[in-house]
Length: 195
Image 1 (tube, helix red, strand yellow):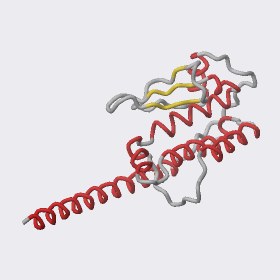
Image 2 (image 1 turned 180 degrees about the horizontal axis):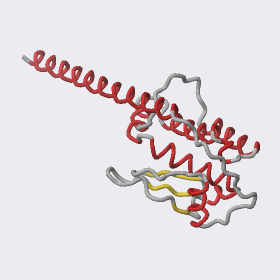
Image 3 (image 1 turned 90 degrees about the vertical axis):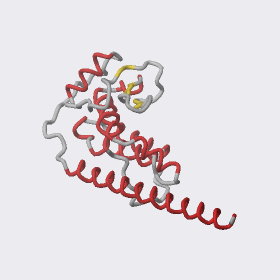
Image 4 (image 1 turned 180 degrees about the vertical axis):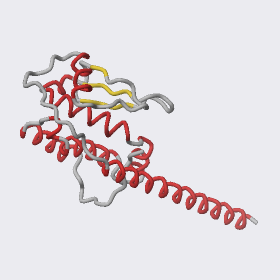
């Protein structure tokens, strides 16, 4: 009798594992399709030449950069705010399910208007449109979760370098940051975490 009970338990666990794996595969495939649709859309058509001066380290500069580069705040995010203690250029945080994403901008983003705009696009146009649950799930099963999400955001900055008027040095810095902290590790064909 114990063998029969153990066998039923193993069968149930196997069936549940298959069901969850199938649902997860469908969910991840949907994310990949959404990514392809997102990048099929045209890039911004208007060119803005940002001031050559360094932006003041203020909330007003963040607001001006949003307008200058036509960066929209997604419905799932709050307006980005200045965080003088943040060591990175930007950070997108989910503080609980059902809450809006919090986007903060640190002093490192204020080296130029171009870098400030690029940072805001990195956070608002990419990270706010990624699915944090999928990223975490992919990390847990050994796939390219966080690395893939970050590389996607940095590649967005690089592919929009003309839009922001990023200098060669800025582009090189973005590229080296991406390669150092988020290497490809020889992975290809990974799914997107985009919603």
